[in-house]
Amino acid sequence: MPTIFTHAIVPLAAGLALGRARIPVPVIATGMALAMLPDADMVGFALGIDYSHPLGHRGASHSLLVAAIVAAFLTALFRPSNWKLVFAFLFFSTASHGLLDTLTNGGLGAGLFWPFDDTRIFAPFTPIRVSPLGMGFFSMRGIETLLSEFLWVWLPAIALLIIGRATIPNSGQIK
Image 1 (cartoon, rainbow, N blue to C red):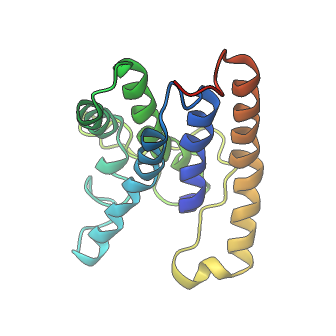
Image 2: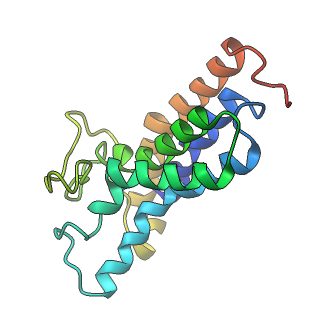
């Protein structure tokens, strides 16, 4: 899995690229939290849930269906006038977690299509180093992980932000 920081950068860049007039700061912050939330399934290890179980790490919580349900629920709570855009943003934010996990070079892949298919998916190209857990994060492997995330996620996210701000009309204006 990418680091928690990297999961949050994707909706931050997307939200800022679209502009706070379209995606308000509380929605951007929610998107960032949602991008990190699927890894709460790590608690399953303490509960005795096997990694490969559909409810295990990178399983159901990483699915597109869960992303859609969470996005729909939170969009209803926010009650925005531009509900379709907010729903799409929150769905993308949540789904981005599982999609990024498919780009890592370790683990079991992500259960994107749960409950219809329990297969764990990897992208055909897996350039992101899987993040070491625990104190292993503070090792050479942790540094290598951060460097691969910078190259494959942070730089494209920054490019998305710059392009969005330059091309989306009024992306910098607040209503």
